[in-house]
Image (tube, rainbow, N blue to C red; front, side, top):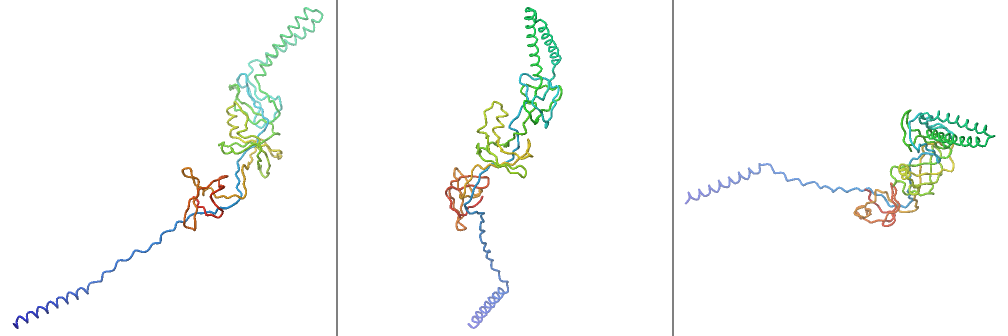
Length: 341
């Protein structure tokens, strides 16, 4: 009994020692680090470019570059038939008088034939005078004189058809580049003469839509160097005269003509000028930059920032529109913040 009791006590002592050793071993291990909490990230706040709705003056205008051209021009063309060039005795910039030769075709001996016929006519006139005492001879001489006159007139007409002369006093502004022997067609423009004392502004554009708002009678501001002049629109594409000439019709469809009551001394054909024509103007109207206006599926609207954080879409009615600004007829109030695109 005593042996059993001692054995039991020994076993208990050993178990306690083993447990103590195990516990002391655990205390020697390094402590496990606790997991770090993720940092709190503040959500980024979106920034909007905004502009306040303001009242002011809005102006729609046509602006561009024009040039001075003559109101009175003479276009030299052969109408009956063409021919081969003998010479063109003028060049661009030359001043000519009415009747001066501009283009000469090869005459093919017509000049000599005309001289010979002139001689025949003078002989017929002399024979008519010498037959004054005899009625029969006088009648025959009269008929012969008429025949020679008709022949002379026809040759003269043929000779004249071989050259073009200026119908006005003016300045040569265009000469076709041709050399001796080149063939020209009927109605081919060879020389243009313009009157430099009667000038107007011609403003031509690539797209006719750029000048569709212009109307006859509108005021135009013309700047020539340091000089500013006031002119008046006298012809627009919609008011241009009808013409069968395709080139001229195309020109009229893209050109404004402006009349100037007085020209400075330095004004010349071809001088460049700046043109400005106000087509619409309104004062004290609501307006925003054009980049603030939006359109989608037939809607015209803006996005308004309210209280610095809330966005609201508002349908609007627009009025005058320029390349940079647009009038707001309804939908907005002064002071609202419109988000730009």
